[in-house]
Length: 316
Ligand SMILES: Nc1ncnc2c1ncn2[C@@H]1O[C@H](COP(=O)(O)OP(=O)(O)OP(=O)(O)O)[C@@H](O)[C@H]1O
Image (tube, rainbow, N blue to C red):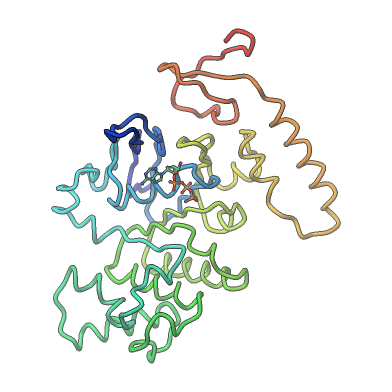
């Protein structure tokens, strides 16, 4: 395996301020100690429900949020340090695609300026060269040349997402953080966008960090997957492992929630789902870690890095 970027014991805690002195009284443990590696040319999926900390990991890798502790190692450098990101090609090598291309594309700018922006940040091209480059990027994402001088509102949601991808690949990145890239799109358009994201991945040898709450989409896109809840990974594995042999009740529960449209198996699926829900709700025992923090069984897993000690419900 060829590793591109390594995340080590990453924690991102947001301060909560209160009282008339506006003192920090507590912290949201948005990301609370995760380890993973994204390989070259592969897609790493982060799955979990709203608020589990997925976006915070993405933003911290992009340098938009500050790590509280831990390391992000890229080409041997720890890029959680701002100075390191500036000195290296990191800011150029790591780009993003957002869920909502409408709000991430400047409505007052024309397509040529939107897509050329990352190029302008990193290299000086003549107007001619720049135009040629933007045209080729439009071609790569399957958009016509006459898009050059149009504005974002003149396109459909799927087309805007293509423009977002064209901008993300403009600086020839190595990694793209894609945060819910298709969630706002119609199902038929989702498939198109996912397919050309795959095509571009092959063409450029790109890696993706693919963030989604949709296990159907993740199965289609991701080679390795981490299931997240409350700032921690409860299960990590290859696509095969996660989908054919899920270990953690939380993963089983997410999988059983994928809607089934094949009618003959629907009743069987509903039965499995009821069983998972029953198992999930019957787990009342609690665990605590070395700092005395208490966890539900729901939120920890066999792969948990911290040695958790078991507390019988009656004993606490
Ligand atoms: N700037 C912030 N200040 C304080 N708390 C924050 C901030 N950003 C996120 N949080 C909190 O951190 C936790 C993780 O949020 P995050 O957005 O990473 O989750 P998520 O899994 O991406 O969810 P979603 O899919 O809804 O975006 C949540 O409890 C959220 O309320």
